[in-house]
Image (cartoon, rainbow, N blue to C red; front, top):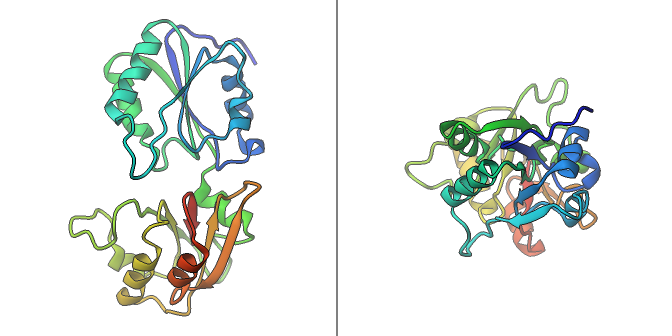
Length: 237
């Protein structure tokens, strides 16, 4: 590859679902070349080990339920580092444009005239089920799939997600960031019309050495999650 140490450029890089082997070649190259890497909580240390010794590493990860740096402050940090003439890698778990707030960061950079590039990553919405042997589409069974975030309660009255429509569909449903709402999600889907016997699974820490898989049905997956003490990051499918 040609040298791309362009002054004042930010690369929004997807780090993939966790396994360092699933970082794209483009992403790995940029990590190696960066002056500064601003990374999220779910980016593993083995991925950060790809960086040069001289690279500055800044952790801006958000931990649920705990005080953390605001998104506006992260945006400002990206802008400030780029204005110093640095090659900045904003390293985000999964894909930066799949529930990663990458669009907000891109908009902030654009408003300030900062050049940026989006480098897609492998999303856990696909890699999570795949690592457990679960296809998200299957000829004759599921011709399409829906990916939703459960960072908000399904019972929230002003939610942007139409859970009722999802419940009435026949697609594969993939839920990210739902570790605290699995029981509520399953009940909402059943109440909306989904068959309680629909196969369901949870994949925790997908693609990592400590990956766990819980298999059940929509009717009991919430109970199984509680008994197994499932925690983030996890994918419900």
